[in-house]
Amino acid sequence: MTPAPRRRNVAPPRESVLVAAMATIAERGLDGLTMAGLGREVGMSSGHLLYYFRTKDELLLQTLEWSEGRLGAARSALLSRQAPVAERLDAYVELYVPDGPRDPHWTLWLEVWNRSQSADADARARQAAIEGAWHRDLVALLAEGISRGEFRAVDPDRFAARLRALLDGFSVHVAVGIPGTGRAQVLTHVRDFLDDALLPETSPAGD
Image (cartoon, rainbow, N blue to C red; front, side, top):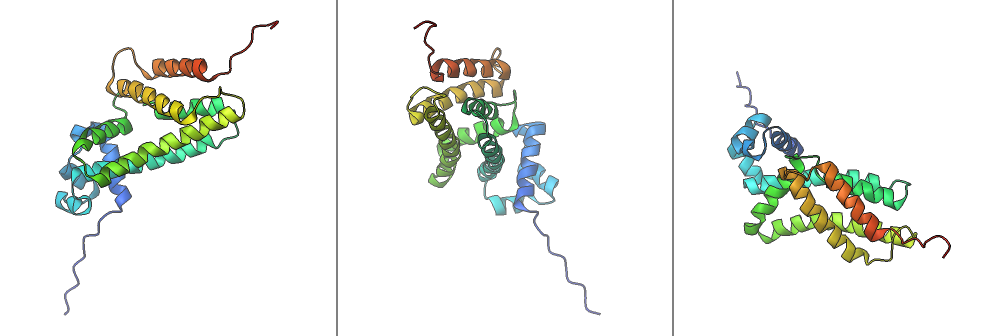
């Protein structure tokens, strides 16, 4: 009797691994994400995971890229709505700012950028691509608001760079739980700044 062929271990789809990694970060934080633990979650050995991802740094970067892909789809849907540009800019800001301390996406973002000092050129280019997508969408939104007369005539690229620096600074405070910089307070600060910097000045009555 011919022996039955042995079943080969089939690796789970790549996205399943990334979903499991993100779920682990959300539930237990980055300290709870180990290759051995993640392997148990998806039915693979840590060695098998390393075969596919090479290093934990690569796993983290791919997980961030996957998470950014989902955010990018949400951002595209928000920005393509038929609504005033100021309203869509507010939606962009709300999507950008973390939900609160230990927000899993921002926890991962901070870790990947912290590790980037020793990253190779390819990894740094992929990180830059993530940032570039947010920047391009913001520049386009500002340019549309200016062309429609909703915003002052600022330089969209320069304003976007400064606004994202402001958002990054506030978002880090929210993500790590700095007292007095919760999500609600940050959104209020940013809205006040945008009103002051972008809304057209109105002439006093009777002028």
